[in-house]
Length: 181
Image (cartoon, rainbow, N blue to C red; front, side, top):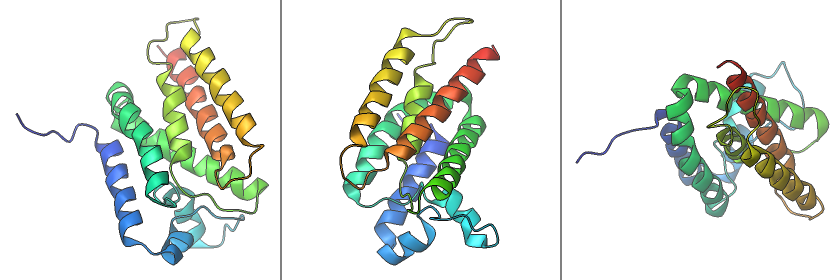
């Protein structure tokens, strides 16, 4: 029996994130692997950070929490949608989350939480049929949005905003992709 690199996008993203956390100092994380805290279209690093923030994580607990979801759900979705489409979804989620965060807030994002929640809501569309909304999607959406709204009342360093944006993008992709069948 041989080992197969079965989900190249998810596995490469996971290895890259592990490497960033293992090898980068806090200063490097802040400079290159956190989202921009303000809109700065003339700065070339602004564009890099729109995507690179998903590879930076605050610590091992943060990384493990995200990657338990990403490594569980991601390979199934990569097989279903293809590596190219999943990579597109990840990039769009990262860019939209970072842009909205920079536009609305003055703080930076760090980590793949938006990607994890995009994958969670996208996965609830796995067996959707024409003109039907899966009950599992409704339950996940209600639990997800309810939990994130309640979580905004707590003072912590977790960005419920990135969770919500990622979740809405995953739901949007699920609706769009299911409508094309």
